[in-house]
Image (cartoon, rainbow, N blue to C red; front, side, top):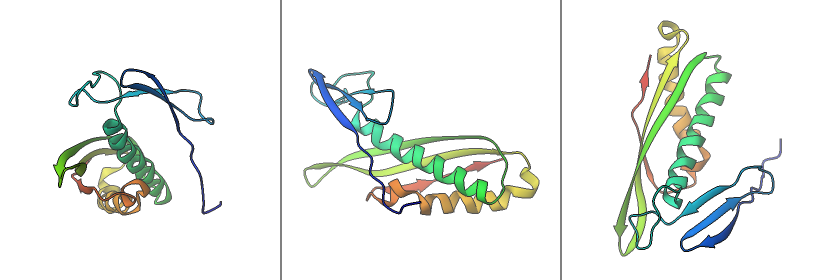
Amino acid sequence: MSKTHFYEVNVQWKQERIGELSSPVLEKSIECATPPEFPNGVPNIWSPEHLFVAAINSCYMATFLAIAYNFKIEIEDFSCKTIAKLEMIDGKYLITQAEMFPVIKLSNAEKDIEKTQRIVEKAKAGCLVTNSMKTEILLTSAIS
C-alpha cells in the first residue's frame, strides 16, 4: 500500500450560507452550512464544526477497530460521543479541546478488558486526524 494518498472534497454554494459537499469517489453528498450560533447561521444542517468533530470521531473509531482486529479482540459494540469546545483565542475561533467518550462492549470482557484499555490509548496515539490538528484530545472510555 502506498504511503501517500489524496482525498478530494468539493463544495458548491447553494444559497445564503448553505453549500453541498461532494467527492468524485462518493455517491452521497452532504449539505453544510454556517452553524446557527453565528450570524446568518442555519440550524439543522451539518456545519464545518460538526464535520471537524465527525472527522475526529470517525477516525478514532476506524483506528480503534483496526488495532482491535490486529490484537484479535472481538468487539460486540462500539460507540463514541465527542464534545468539542470552540473558543475565541487572540481574536480567532479555535476548537481548543475535544473530549471523547468511547463505549466498548467486548465479547469476552474477562479476558480482553486490560488489553482493550491499552488499545483505547493506542488508537488515540495513532489517529491520523487528531495527529494532524492542535486540538487537545481528552479520552474517557467505558469498557465492558
